[in-house]
Structures are given as structure tokens and as C-alpha cells.
View 1 (cartoon, rainbow, N blue to C red):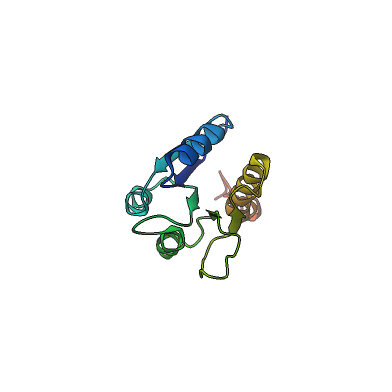
View 2 (view 1 turned 90 degrees about the vertical axis):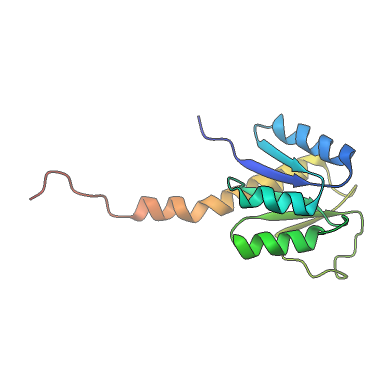
Length: 139
């Protein structure tokens, strides 16, 4: 059985956060949920996070600021930014994917998460396959 991937979900709207957490857990993911950007950054620093899904507009550290801080610590950690604002041009973001709230199906979010996680671990597996295997018993 493959290990579960851990997703950090961040949203100051408790209803959205709860919905996202349940949706992801029923698909086999571990979910760490936070309602504030500062809290999420501290949780990320503890390690073990494979992907981040965050709301854009939050008090304190907002979504783009949170993603920038996470990418500074771990450039290869994928991040999805969700916003009720369709225009992303107002904010400079390092998010890998942007989704407009209400404009995507839950299946679309799940597929984007799956693809980002595959892309994150892909090169490591290919590298391991092509690495020379140690010769045992050769003098």
C-alpha cells in the first residue's frame, strides 16, 4: 500500500475548509487544515506536507504571500491558489495552479492535485530507475 500524501488546506472560511478536508480525506489523502496563513506557515515548517491548497484572500498572510513563503522554503512543493476573484493579474503569485471558486468542479480540483503530486515525485522515480545498481559479491 502506498503512503498517503499530506495536503495542507488553508482557508479562513470554515465551511469551505471543512468541505475541502472531507473531500480530500475520502479520496485517501491526509489533510492538515488551517484557517490562518501564519498558522499554515508554522505547520508547513514542521514538515511532511506534499501539496498546499490555499484561499487567496485571508486576513494577515494571504494566499499569494503564503505560497511565496512556502516556495522560498521548498521550491518544489506544489501549490494551488483558489479565489472568488477571477482576475489573477491583480496579484503576483507563484502558485502552480489557479482556480476560481465556483468555476471548477470538485473532480477538477482532485485531478489537478493528482497531476501535481505525480509531477512532484516523477523525476525522482525515473532517476532511481536509471541509477546503476550496486554489484553484490563482486571483488
